[in-house]
Length: 404
Image (cartoon, rainbow, N blue to C red; front, side):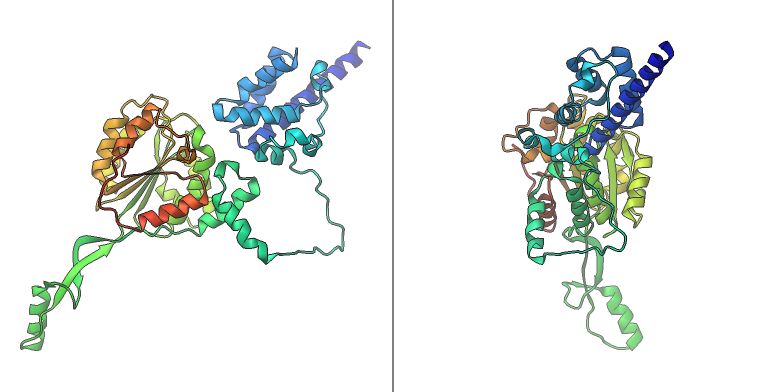
């Protein structure tokens, strides 16, 4: 009898562990940075703390899976939907795999994040096609433009998995037409204002007599583009889509240099030059070690100014800095480094997804240190904002913006 009870307890313990592992997969599908190691930590934490009450169980898993404030809402929604069966927590280790039906509670459904609902419902209702059955595909061309328009204005954070895939496809076709600027080199031009004496003399020697004057004018070329992209936890949802954007522009033109930063600076230019976006992003993931961590903006800018600025900021480079400005070092060293960067480039544009909020105020020390030294301060949270950025870069700007 004792052996049978012990065997039953082991089976129930395994079921609870399976449920926690499945819950971790749901959180990962919803966008939280939860890997296998974190899932195992959750199982160990529940075993160590026990399942005394629903509140204790909630905070035990919360302490393991949530490390940022913006992840709390997703975790809370996923927890209350996934673990809504009260018998799971009333009995110690009596946790059967919950049957998730997101449509069951209409009042809660309205408040559930689309990514959480999609992650929980993934795989439900899928029926295998019968043999011999023909698949009927219908395409309504009248709705294509409308759907694209809605997608243009939708925040990257609010997109479902399918919408993110559509956004990536649109981003892959984007081009960034940076304005051409005159260089120090000259080229032959019959209508040029400068007389090219060397070309004129060479032509005279070849003909043995008088020839009309040869003229020249300055050559035009787009300046180098340098991208500094924040990949900290608060920017993770945006930075992954920005990587697709940076891959598109890297393969569209020359002299594009891309860096990502969190707690350290990493040059990913070589990885993004691969034509296949999946291979390129796989190489980036393998080469970057500080994904979804903290942010040390001052330290990373110092690294860039000391080791990379002379290599990539020549010939009046345009710099795009993509960051929310939130810094774990409370803005230490940012002012001096961003001022140095600003003086070394033709134009410094700061793209901040937080600017999409109407009530945005620069209260963070990092944001206050960055604002006075940027030429343009723009939001970048959807496809329309990326299109506006392309329009802005295609037009020359002579005056530097004075940030308020």
